[in-house]
Length: 99
Image 1 (cartoon, rainbow, N blue to C red):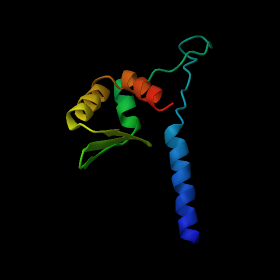
Image 2: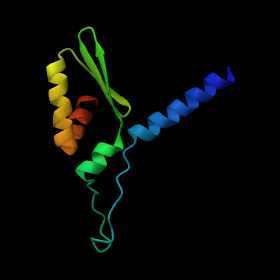
Image 3: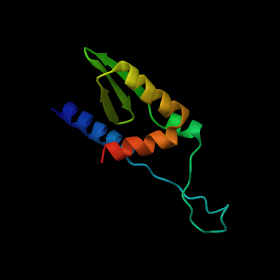
Image 4: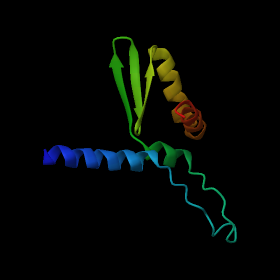
């Protein structure tokens, strides 16, 4: 019982850390004015693990703590490629879908 509770607590903490998107501010470059930090493409791609699970009808793509189900593998691969080539735009799109 104790092990299960510890695993649950660890998983909950991991989910919270994964889903929180702390955006640091770059005050040094703006003379103290706070502007949103924009991570590079490489930083965004390194931020979350990507998992693909193929099922009977399509696949499930997991990015960080979020999962997206696709009934068509071609559509899933197109969306994944969109994410790889422009992660900032894809993240905005996916966050909009999960609100």
